[in-house]
Amino acid sequence: MTSPLISSSASRLLMRHYRLASVTATKKNYHRCTSNNAQNNNNISLPEQHSLSNGTLRHKLRTGQPTLGVVTGFHNDTDHAETLGLLGYDFLWADAEHSTANASTVANLILAAERRGLPTLVRIGYGYQNVIGHSQKFLVAGAQGIILPQCESADDVHKIVDAVKFPPIGRRGLAGERWNSWGLGGQNNGGGDVTLADCVRTSNDNSIVGVVVESRRGIEALDEILSVEQIDFVFVAPTDLSADMGLHGQIRHPDVVDMVDKAGQTIRAAGVSSGMLALNGDDYVKYRQLGFQVMVGVAHTMFAEGARSLKSRAEDYESSGGE
Image (cartoon, rainbow, N blue to C red; front, side, top):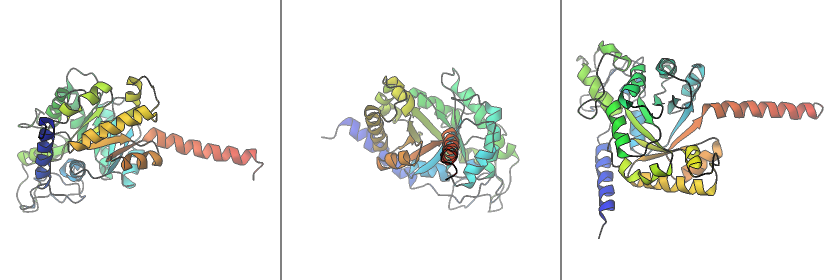
């Protein structure tokens, strides 16, 4: 006999696959607003428009395709955000948890990334009493989605869904903002006017909800976390998890790797994309082979490794007498 847990998981998986069949993959033109309706073809072909109008990233996440992003705390530098876009990364993870970033500085990152066709997701800080109000500032700044750290319950996920999605799915407040061109409207390819209601539907279709599980308590709560339909990916954070396990910073310790691997299996079994850190190319290959789909590098590590490599090569050359 099939257990209730397996039956519930299979049911969620079938519902997710049914919904995915209706998703239309959009071209990488960043339009103002689109209803994602393939029959009406109501895309607005204006390249200067917001990435939220493009469903490519969420489609990849919901279908379990590999994606590669970079987490950055360099919120006062926009050049690196544009560079990552030019190099073809899938998304920028702007970090407002482990940095001094605020909505104003992140807005500059978002504008730079948007210029190069790179969607931005923002990881908000942990412990805010009003998750909706705090998230709203980054959504107003132009973030395509929000990543919630320290997720340990379905209630945590519901809070972030409420913040990211408009009614009837969530509780996000509606106004003229960057993502909808401040309500200035426009015309779709069929010649009709784009309404604010069209933009809301597009936002609910394409905005992204991600959570980070980084404790044993969070991993134990994965079944209830994964029961929330609007969740797009779950990232397993090895550094905080190692600390919670008493192995501070030992992200490659066999016990940490084993717990990360088992968490990833649970996440994917529910039909949700699993995410993991890739500090180098070897990490990427290892965790992709384990099945993780959402891989995230670290901007500071990229900078440090490049700087270290040059310095080491220079020192070797000089110490050898120029040979």
